[in-house]
Length: 71
Image 1 (cartoon, one colour):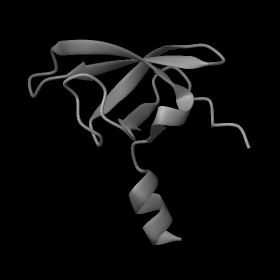
Image 2 (image 1 turned 90 degrees about the vertical axis):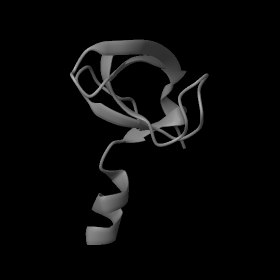
Image 3 (image 1 turned 90 degrees about the horizontal axis):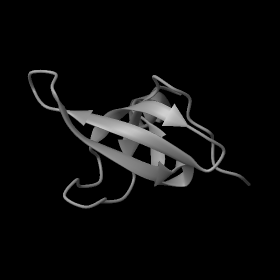
């Protein structure tokens, strides 16, 4: 089974740690191709903190846990 492809402006959550960002960190996809997504993380004021290029299978939709619990 292939990993879901995330689209630009999708809110995503890291499934594994990436650099200084722990699993569970959320961000917004700002660019995507068939293999990777470029994810922007922001601070509490909405300023960009970092950009992470990650394979789609290392990301989940930001609401994936609550969506599973509701079904």
